[in-house]
Amino acid sequence: MPDARWVPQENLHVTLCFAGEVQGGTMRDFEEELADIAGPPFAVTVAGVDEFSNCKQPRALVALVERSDRLDWLQQKVTTVARNCGIEVERRKYRPHVTLARFPVGAETGHHIAQFMASHGTLRLEPWIAEHFSLYSSRSGGSGPIYTAEATYDLTF
Image 1 (cartoon, rainbow, N blue to C red):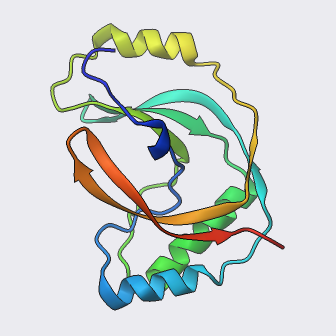
Image 2 (cartoon, one colour):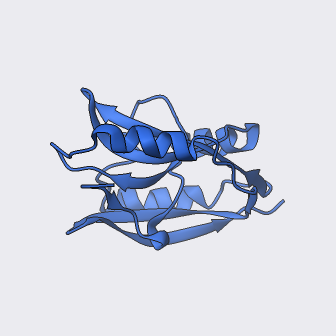
């Protein structure tokens, strides 16, 4: 697909909460409070593809993640912890997904996205078990964000 910046495999993830810029003591508090989240491992299933657009301009191509009670519970817990730590989080409705590719402003996507959607719209991967969640930081890189795992929290119960 022309102009698509594909996400490297090591950067594929499901975002639970986007917290923006967090530093210092707030970051330490956030890391410590996330450790108090306790829950069992649960299944995660990727099913379908979609595009995210901004004013009719495609921004990203994504694989959709099926909603589940456990995923929604974890997302809500992480978001609540962030807010309780004084972190401003995005207020958009939660749409679990894995970003596959990003498009620069003015990208030539035309019929290519429609072709991709037609070819991959029935995508359904075998479920995997989420046994942990991680806190990542990101910084801008030449071909997209560079993610660094700051902490990992096991889901055990």
